[in-house]
Image 1 (cartoon, protein in one colour):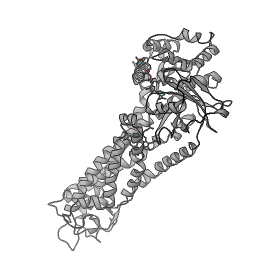
Image 2 (tube, protein in one colour; image 1 turned 90 degrees about the vertical axis):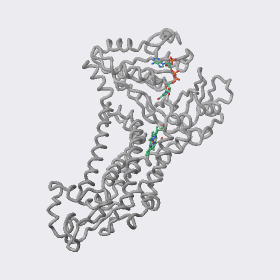
Image 3 (cartoon, rainbow, N blue to C red; image 1 turned 60 degrees about the horizontal axis):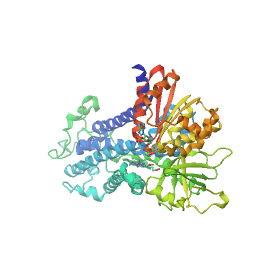
Image 4 (cartoon, rainbow, N blue to C red; image 1 turned 120 degrees about the vertical axis):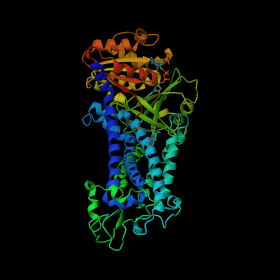
Length: 551
Ligand SMILES: NC(=O)C1=CN([C@@H]2O[C@H](COP(=O)(O)OP(=O)(O)OC[C@H]3O[C@@H](n4cnc5c(N)ncnc54)[C@H](OP(=O)(O)O)[C@@H]3O)[C@@H](O)[C@H]2O)C=CC1
Ligand code: HEM
């Protein structure tokens, strides 16, 4: 039991701890801001005018500030790839958190949507109260031009109102088009709408320059509650219509000593100033970082690659070999392919199956033709579908379509080399990340921590194994004996692997070790391995689960 807890903690602990920390900061930020506007002496008159709507609108704005700042960071993929590669900078546990970057991005995105609803609702109430609680005494505090003015005026004729309206519209479009089904069926729509994020940020930075909500700047000359000799009552707002609590009930002695002031004479009338714009502090940094990342990626991917060879494999897989000046990549990384002849904006991630080395500049990917984009791409590559293989030296190269790559970007499979023992389970074309790992082990494995690799590849059709038959046999021959492809036969087993039994065997042979479990394939395979990694813990062996994803 203790061991399975240790496995669970090792697999799930980091991400749950990070999520708890992020949640706590959100709650703390909301509560701290709520209290500031509820009890803050400098907001006493504004609170009297707007009531809880003020506190909730400002508290939700604080949460929006933080998440609008965080939402872009997980998408700085080049920065994430650098962090993955810099082993000195982060521990493996910290690097494994990078696998959840897209999940964190979506979480922040949804939080922005949720608190945008809260923020808009609270500001609707504020618009109403600005109108109902128009103050003759403090004209600087008012947003309405006169009492009982139509609150819709603020929403559609002021900068915060108009920018807020369009921000909600953009956010609605971005989120509704981000659903998995729409991204899968019509990536272009997702891409067009999601790139409205730049409009979202421009509107956000304009939104907060409205300066409608004001704080009192001369508390030393006029502490709320003091007596104005020119007025008999201290009620500056039409109490019958205003939502704010009665004067003395809100402020207790411990909060600000308000009662004492009801005997003090005010030295001068209250003066009000617009709040400092915190949003610029929160958002400017990450926005500049992300824009710099996109600019760097644009410049880096602006030069087309040279296609060296195109191989057609069984079961609708094509292998593409390319070369690009100064392109470097680590095994397990992926690139994003963009072919303007197929689609103007649509691009797709593919894991590198061969990475460039010192003595070979080419790199390769294996593409399973599944959807319209890959279908069209194959037609452009293999003009004559009957051609089995077509390897053209660079000089005689046919006119292939222009092809651009973005990346390389990091992925969990890079960690395979950082365990002493690793188990790689591939389902179908999900073998690609491990192909690059195996290719690397062909050359120089001594530099890595990895000393034992278990590799399981599950395919629907036996012909699929021909995608990497050469590689598997060379590996096998290099480390074991056997004729060409004979080796494969001796390791080909018909039927599903008994993963639970396999884990037990691995645990027995690697007592007291931490085994890195890597999966790339169908979700149900991934879920089964994840469950086993959390559960199996015999012989003191721990299984650390790493799900492959284009994070
Ligand atoms: N870097 C990355 O993130 C990459 C991810 N991928 C992903 O990998 C997946 C591969 O798809 P595809 O080639 O169609 O794979 P398949 O759907 O053909 O599945 C491959 C094999 O895995 C078997 N399988 C599925 N679930 C289990 C399980 N729980 N236990 C044992 N065997 C199981 C299947 O058996 P059965 O026939 O019974 O279903 C099938 O024989 C895709 O979802 C793709 O997105 C691919 C490449 C790279
Ligand atoms: C204010 C809110 C949001 C902003 C500013 C934002 C911004 C971005 C940016 C800049 C990217 C990177 C595009 C790239 O470099 O490839 C991105 C990608 C992504 N966003 Fe958002 N997003 C927001 C909300 C959401 C929400 C709510 C969801 C989910 C429902 C979501 C899902 C995604 C996904 C899945 C990707 C990755 C696309 C891919 O690479 O496959 N986003 N987003």
